[in-house]
Image 1 (spheres, rainbow, N blue to C red):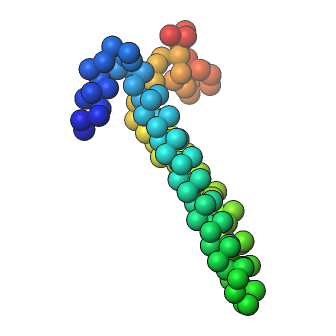
Image 2 (cartoon, rainbow, N blue to C red; image 1 turned 120 degrees about the vertical axis):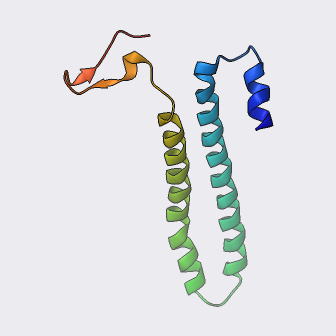
Image 3 (cartoon, rainbow, N blue to C red; image 1 turned 90 degrees about the vertical axis):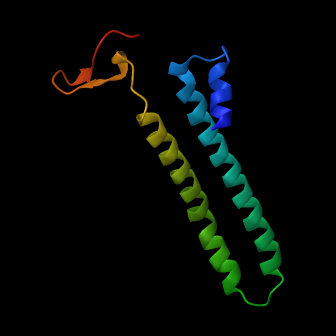
Amino acid sequence: MAWQQWLEQGDWIQRQHFWVLEVFTIVFVTLVANWLLKRLFTRLDVKLRATRNLWDDVLLEAARRPAEFGVWLLGIAWAAGWSTSVPLPRCWRWSRRRAMWAGSCC
């Protein structure tokens, strides 16, 4: 990816902290997707209120919250999956033997 190579060449971010920018980008894309979904539902609501059938309005309202929740759930799951592919510093690793966070902080 050209953008990733361009970002890695700069001195403004260290490679070990690059994943934070990637996760932030994923969360931002999720925010934009949710905003677009809300706009879509609003436009559909205006169109469907003009019809005589009441059921289309009810189905749209019933689908609005689960759809928004689904977008956020997928976005956060994607960001969490991306961040778990990055090795954690020693202080963030869970020690099962001691049942506590292991190591001294970075």
